[in-house]
Length: 536
Ligand code: TEU
Ligand code: CA
Image (cartoon, rainbow, N blue to C red; front, side, top):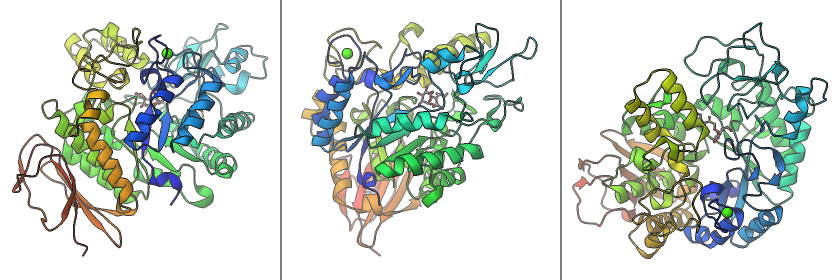
């Protein structure tokens, strides 16, 4: 067991967490003000989405200087203070590390525009093929993966045009990132969440085969060289510090995940964010949603639980819609949010709570496309128009899927409480009902439930060490056990809005439930129970 495996993680999207100076933008001093809150929740590790210098085309995922703090968020001294104040409360930080691309404002990229610069090959600059682009690859945000330089050549970007891809075949690249990683580890960071970490190394730049999305994928997805780079980073840079890596890995199955997690010298990542369960309610791409099928969802989770010894567990992040809106219900808001938290904190692995999830924050209620700020949302809005999708359908796609669903400001009190100024992104107007202050005072709130759940997780080893075993996963019920030599717990989740017959062992002690203890013969909508059952 590594130390981090006992911990509960919390993801902060700094821009939307807490604004300390009234400019409408969340900042590092704002996070420091909320450390006591995080400690009261029971959080041990915080993943900070990027706080580096950035022109904010993709809000920090376009980094213009890896060694400095975005002045909107504060200073290096603020960052050092955050680490120090966190440590006093037993809270440790992991930072976001984007190695696939930089901002087009990064000094390397600017220098690389000169064909004779030693930085030219830090990126992929290529001439076109006559009037055509260097190849047919398409980007993650929709559209072509190449944009033109002033001199008429093109550069590769798997994401926005302002996010040029780095060339990991360049002999300096490893050394550059070694410096960056050590710089932050020396400041007391415990590790990194590595952005799109399995598409960094490109095998070749030839045309991709015909595909609906991500043309070119087969030439850069989890290449042998990519594995090699990650192994080296982990062994030579990360391990000597006793630090750890969480990889965001796109399109991995359980086999590939096991290769990435590996053992000994072949270990690349300590855990990873997989997407298969996130794909359970979509058709081909995330923009085509279909109705949520709890059985499908729980089967995918079960497969991952059974094939991977330890992994990152999440239902939400800054790229995904809010889980209560997606897998739960507005009508049973409280019950379904609590049920989902029970799932998150009782599966085997490191649970990641995304800011606001602990109070059941919902998808945004924006009425106009102008309320949205996300580059991907804007791209898809424009692209779907070009493709002549009907307007009502385009709007529904944005409403259900936009990343801004997760990025609206944190709801601290009935007035909002995020900022004394005008927030950079509109707040969701249900803050009167859904906010930290109200829920702190209410012993029956979602927030209070999270606190109890985390206490229980910390109290019994079975939630960390216990083997996962599925018991029943039909009719929208997800029932499983966690078991060690000394203890066995049964987790019963009704993932639907219907009453369901299900008889369970009543000899056990109920450790936690999300309903008052009256009904016995059937499960109520979104009912969740954790029961300590006799060991067999
Ligand atoms: O995301 C990469 C990714 O594959 C997606 O989840 C992405 O959010 C997009 O929706 C694909 O449709 C990471 C970051 O988490 C994301 O915020 C960044 O925009 C992206 O990389 C580029 O750095
Ligand atoms: Ca601010």
